[in-house]
Length: 119
Image (cartoon, rainbow, N blue to C red; front, side, top):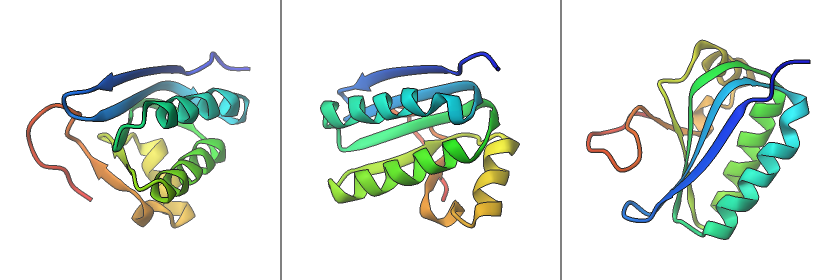
C-alpha cells in the first residue's frame, strides 16, 4: 500500500480552466478519487480542464484509463482536456508504450500564465 496521491482542484475563472493537480504515486486504488475529480470538472463546466501531472512519481494503467475516459468525456461535452507537464518519465513512458500519447495535448504552460504549449 502506498500513500494516496495528492489531488487538488481549483477553478481559474479568468482563464475559464478547471485545474486538477496530481502529485505522488497513482495506481488502481486511486480510481475513485479520479472519478470524483472528473465529476467536479463536469460540475464546474469550464471549457478546459488542465491536468497537472508534473508531480506524479509513479503511474500505472489506472491513470492511463482515467485520462482516456476523461478525454472521451470532455470531447463528448465539447470541452478540452490538457495535460500539463513537464510530464514525468513514468507518465511519458505510459503514454508512449500504450500508443495513446497522440490522443492528448500536452503543454508545459500553467493555466493562467502566458506562453505557448507543445503537442
